[in-house]
Image 1 (tube, chains in turn cyan, blue):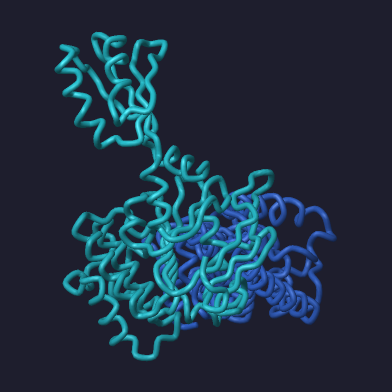
Image 2: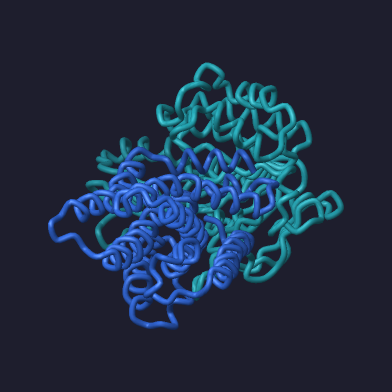
Length: 309
Length: 237
């Protein structure tokens, strides 16, 4: 994916299994500066992979190195890494500022007050910094956790589902902040199960499905493949046979069949055109459309398509 | 190290935990008061074996320590905040040892006051006995703390397993099987009480002060070392 010489993180043939369950299977990739999205449906193995990459969990086989050093049992390396896990638990009895300072102190940050000011300023929570964290909204907790992750100015940021709980305004701010950090040369790994989230942020993408690296590379190439993906759309109408015979002639339609329940299933590679053509078609044939539903719009099916392609 | 110690102190001093510990620590004192005022007061031997040996050293001290030590790591493993410390450049011993010290700091005053007051009341101010029982109890707290800190790192069921250990091992087996006493913190505490005041608890035939001091040191250092090792090798959730 990137030039091996510029790789900051190297994951080499890493597997991790729990008993008979394989969570991560023979995954290899290199990550360099910039934002890399770790994308995959829930349960795909993203969190396990991130835990292995940060040294929180042991690999069953394979190695993970960062800056050429092993990540496991290597505390000095954590001066250079900031990790924000998906778990939102915080020390409820602390104020936001106390939490950020505590995280800075255990990371041996020299001028802790200044560093805390800077980190809290980055996430725009200065006004709420002296409130106990138990009073924070979910989005505020996430932002203060990000401040705590940034307080020691790490070169590598590993963020597991960081946008969980953030409202739209916070998301915009968060994305802008990550982009600034990436532009300053940091290596950022960001996991998400939301395709659009990663699309807006990541230059490169690692696609994890069922514990395996299903695809990797520039997001644009993956997105181009996605746009070529055929969609199945199921239409319930009062005259399914008439609708099917007319729909098969539409330019946006690749194939049509009627399912056992009487629904018309249309295969299309151009859903945008289909959305406009279908109502016109129904109107011209005096056909009532009762329901139009995508059959394979789940993230899993999107990922499945990318894997097949 | 100071940051982890202060964090642990704050985590271990929740209101309800302190109330429970206060109630537990008050029990031997109340019982000692009832015993000496009762017309059927027990003999000195009955008091030493029943209250100092079984209740204070074998039940109250381990229960108080368990309530605290189990929280030192097990709660952080359960709520997944342990990663905040593990993902820092601190050597693992600088995480495990401050938590152990914080556990002792919180538990020891309760047991020390309980041991002091119980013995003072029962032995009518015999300061040699009071000091012996108090010092031995504090050392017992340190040993139980080291053991239960380690337990909190190997299982999320530390409270349940700790209770089983207190009831079955310290309460049952060590009372009947002589050999088990060499592996019983309760009996180390009894031996220390006897070693520091030879008039007390001699009928339980405890090992010498030197022997129990060496064993206690080995147990404390051993569990502390095992906790550090465990923290290095475990998967942190």
